[in-house]
Amino acid sequence: MVIRLLTFFLIGLVLFTLFSLFLADFLGYLWVALAAVLVIGIAYLTFHYIKKIMILMKREQ
Image (cartoon, rainbow, N blue to C red; front, top):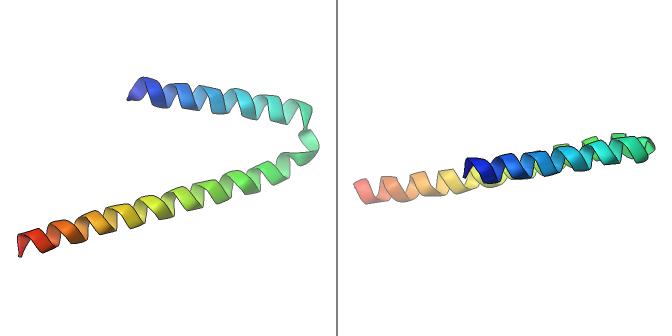
């Protein structure tokens, strides 16, 4: 699992480096897109874990 995450991180780092080198004019838009992806990811994880907590709470009762 750690190796998979590290691989994705390195691929993302290489893609970001290539993007920032060759398309520097669009770097501001990339930050906005990355922030949107981060917010969507955190919202999904929050929804998923709240749903899981609710299921566990129902099982306890």
